[in-house]
Image 1 (cartoon, helix red, strand yellow):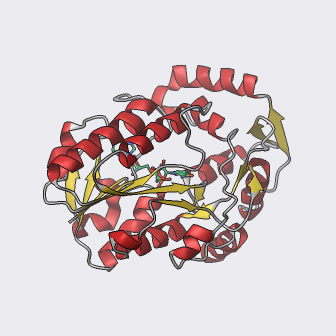
Image 2 (cartoon, protein in one colour):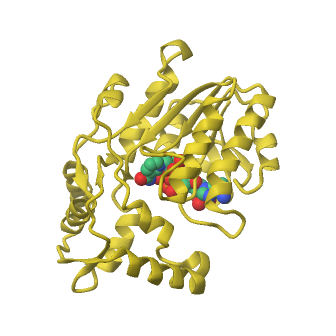
Length: 298
Ligand SMILES: NC(=O)c1ccc[n+]([C@@H]2O[C@H](COP(=O)([O-])OP(=O)(O)OC[C@H]3O[C@@H](n4cnc5c(N)ncnc54)[C@H](OP(=O)(O)O)[C@@H]3O)[C@@H](O)[C@H]2O)c1
């Protein structure tokens, strides 16, 4: 039995479809099973929450492999970024060791560092440490920015594109190597198919192009058929506005400062797509993915 957390997310939904198609028995730790859509009838469901570590024990019964994708880039009513990403992963690893799990695949992020300016990347670094210090056979997957046509960021941009000019937080010069969620899912399937001995301890998964945040935004707006001029707003102003919005709208805020600040941190690797290709996956260019999606919906 494989335990998948974060099955309703960008990577998780792409991965879950592949796992069930391959008839791999899957249990999903979810807050709300309805968000699994049609897949919910093909999997076992363990109700749980990153903010509720006792729920991990039940979810891990009889499990041999864990793929831990669930994560949060903003505080939630039941837990902070640090609790949901850092402490929850540490507790998940402990529970997995107690449950006799053999293999633990953990999704971190490129640039995770205990000294990073962002709370999220600091919490991911601590989570990575908990995973690599464990006795479990483990794999850390560190992607650059992951996207899929119609994802939350594109939806937000679509709304901003109703304005005559689209605001961009800061100078937008941080660089990324965006990778399509379907390519990431293919990579995970390939590493799950390997035996432990031939699996690397860490895979850095990126797409074939290096783009600034500004270039990514321009590309997405063009693909949505709404090219707009960009207005770079100083981060001091963005931070004040978003913190005030979050104080009023709480979890309903359309964007938070913690999320915007992540767009100030580059997520690139000099090795490029080498790790993905070693797994037999040749990640696609963003334009090609967006063009295909536009043809399907257009
Ligand atoms: N997307 C990126 O650009 C990117 C970049 C680097 C690293 N990563 C990492 O890659 C992994 C997958 O990312 P993704 O983009 O697929 O994530 P995502 O789309 O944001 O999905 C997050 C998942 O975590 C679940 N989740 C959130 N809070 C939870 C909680 N309190 N309890 C249980 N589940 C909870 C969500 O479930 P609900 O349906 O209940 O909300 C959802 O399934 C994550 O670990 C992420 O940090 C992503």
